[in-house]
Image 1 (cartoon, rainbow, N blue to C red):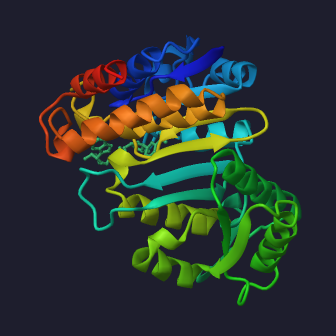
Image 2: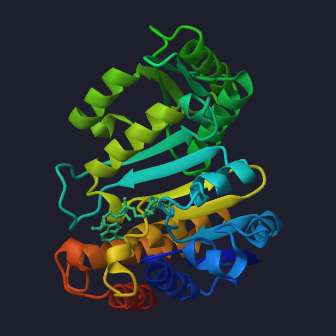
Length: 333
Ligand code: NAD
């Protein structure tokens, strides 16, 4: 199948090349349609998000994307946010899984955060009230709450998971979070095979740092989802280890959580794991589970060995060398 490939800015081309090489070693039939977005697109197209990038993702329905730099002080808004809006990528999926060999306070974290990506306080409806007050409006709708809850349950089933926890503050925000919770409860009735529970956001944060093993899939409105997904990344060793996906009816974009780390651009130095794990999510999305499992097993082995890993994992390997080691493990069986 055809997949849009966006190498991205900064470290993007290095980690995307490593990921492409690893995916190609599985021999899954993919034709990459490479598209330029971000800083490199500005000189060529006069915009960091040319129409042909959007068209390519709409046609192919799936994209693998490196991080993009948001130019400061040029008037361009975030390309990442624009892409999510343009394609209505309403679900942000962020797994956080412990890897043996990665320094962290926890050993057995295996969580998935499903964040609503389009509304809540991030709808951008805010204004000053006179000079000394400001008002931001939190928008929660039945349509968006039901579809994100349904996404979370469907993901739980597809990924063989057991439980969905809806996270909210409905005791205080009785209208907005009350509606979110009501929608999650209603959708839960459609999925009797998956356990359902809800937690208040404050209690959830405490529980996650005390007993992360009690949780499985969490579904949250936009703002809580933003914060809790970073909290979960911290539980498993940080940015270099955390993949992500933004998914909607018109397409799905798979990308690491971290940014373009411009100071390491072109140095073949940074950790490709988050990007490779995003590639694994993409393979699962296109129903190539065997290839996804094969890469994941090899990534785990290489990190546990600790011999051919990048600087942030305590090694001296280059990005490309770590990818080659992963391929060697894959082909060794
Ligand atoms: P960043 O994630 O790019 O980098 C912060 C630091 O984290 C780096 O300096 C590096 O030390 C470390 N790091 C990040 N990725 C790593 C990796 N794979 N391996 C090892 N270490 C890694 O964050 P930033 O500096 O705040 O942002 C840089 C640019 O990236 C900005 O323009 C920002 O807008 C953009 N950004 C893009 C995305 C995206 O495309 N989805 C996400 C976040 C930030």
